[in-house]
Image (tube, rainbow, N blue to C red; front, side, top):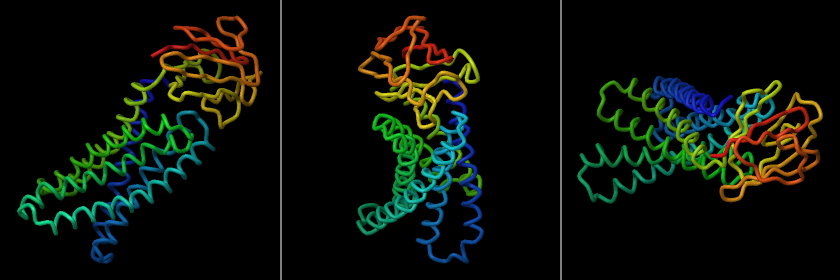
Length: 294
């Protein structure tokens, strides 16, 4: 998958997550009277949204890498983090609303039409922040986590603002909720990939074999390459590739490649450690990759 298709894919993942959340929210609205408690309803809604957004975004990396096990692990991790975050966000938002209501600093009309939707939108941005950080948590990468936090926060804020203000000012709450949740999902996916591209050190493009044409964005300061599925760049299906074959080390705007367990060729020359330049061709086992700096 190319870097451009990656942006489209993450945007579509966000759209699917938002649409699935919309369906669940409408079911909860339908059974609202049976649920009774307003706090319980909001907690269920937050938990459901967090679970679905976490499930979709958590599994995205594994899907893009065509790795079923990674997709399942990521999806389950994301679902758990998202569910907890959804409940916490609701509690925080309700506490903020309670504080605003008791402060009596503003007229009731201002609180209802402006402050209430703003505080709830802030809550959704916090949910987006957690969802965006899932991949960084899973990969134990503070840099990837920071990218996810930035992208998730902005995407969640954009969708949350639209969701809450449309609900206040548009009589058709059904479509208002749907549009807001869709924009929230799209925003998280799009902003994540934009920040990822901005903060990246470059990318590797596979030139040969089963993964030909796939791009791997270099985001982390240490990127492991090899046959094992836990690698940051897994090269499954290529002969002569070892479990942890090589490593990319990024410093400032410079990226080095070095041996780990196996031999590496750069432009057909064996190396131990090499500073990568524009369009260097790396050979790891039978896999060839093209380096394109940022």
